[in-house]
Image (tube, rainbow, N blue to C red; front, top):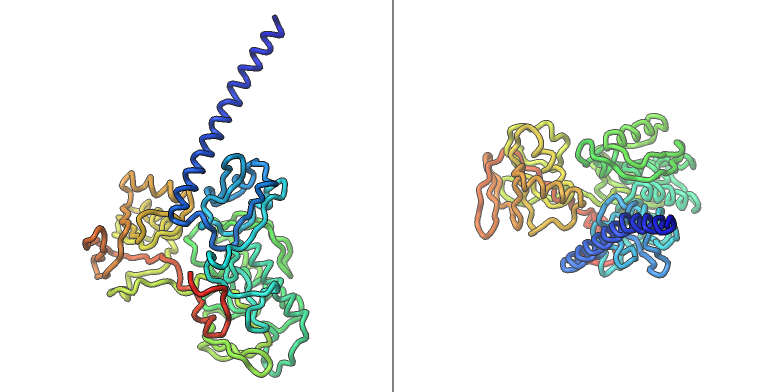
Length: 433
């Protein structure tokens, strides 16, 4: 009798725990499968850069990679195997590969027919022009750890080659860009005794400088020359910029900010780099400028008005204001959400597509909830036609709407610096995006 009671209790425990777990698992797999089919219709299931390749024979379906991915809906377990669901949103940070207990994941680049444009690079990250290298985001990597590793790697390669004799004020290497890749290159160059110079068109921080305030920056631990181990994995934008300021204070790197590189042409012993302030000669050049480039503009009448801006630094600066945000990526959505939660602002988001397809899942949930609560308005399939002092004319649903407006934020990405690189003479993987 006692044995029977024990078996009954065990059966009840199994039914009460295993069955609900199995049902939840099947429900999540069904949702992931439906999401994958939905994204296939728009092509957003395919990656455009560095992304995980999952060996189905090795994968045990444990879901560790899904849990490790901070982008939330990039990976999922379907039919007992991990799959890439929202490939277009993958930034190639590699946490999934680190988390896989059986080593079934490796990072690969999307094929040239699918990937966004990237410079043609050798395994040493050298472009089609000798002694011009690429490090970081410009080459297709999106994680700070990767950018730092590439910055160090290209300097190691430069230092290993016979140095060309440099005369006068010439440098061994000029580094274009003062983001993580550029600063890591500079630290490595200084550690190795190279004559170097960093040129940055804006200020320290690179792409991170354009993040909204208090935005969390994701990375993985990495090692910096002349500094040591950097252990944080999540850090706010402000804290991260302060970290780089401390690095510069201690190491006294040779960095010139607010100096945009306008030209790179062959010289007698390397290259001559031109800026608005002068020209610099160097044996090698490291391009660590990122992919953001200059802010993408709308090209409409009135865009030169003072109320039009291309980055949001502090949503708290706006109250009781009519605001239009233009764009459909995470930056635009996050800005619209932040502004709508402040000081009774009246926020409209204009996006040219019929739905959000490239934003983080948490942003998709947040903006859907904000729309439901009438905290902000979204105009899908819309295009800004003209910006006037007090209103903006927006074409939507086949007609022109007049939107009351005090401030316009154009957060539609940046013009990639590829035109400049082609003028320099650098080759690319392919010619279409």
